[in-house]
Amino acid sequence: MNLKRTFGAVLTVLGIVGLIYTGVQIIQHTGAPTTLIVVGLISVIFFFTGISLVRNTKDEA
Image (cartoon, rainbow, N blue to C red):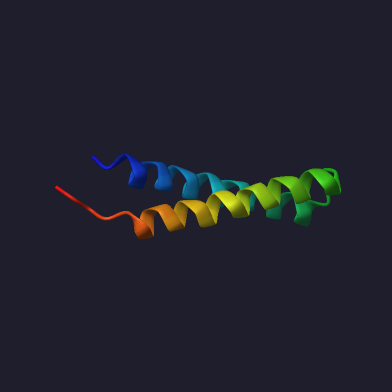
């Protein structure tokens, strides 16, 4: 079990969930704009960091 790949997958899923949450809040016009900006930014960082970890980690047995 590769810990980096697992952590990358978790970060990617958290990023996707955060982006969906931000999108829903924007569409419903609920939530403070600064909160949505911060959550969206953190979600984007999590998403791209997770994708990078999964892509750059080599499987070594």
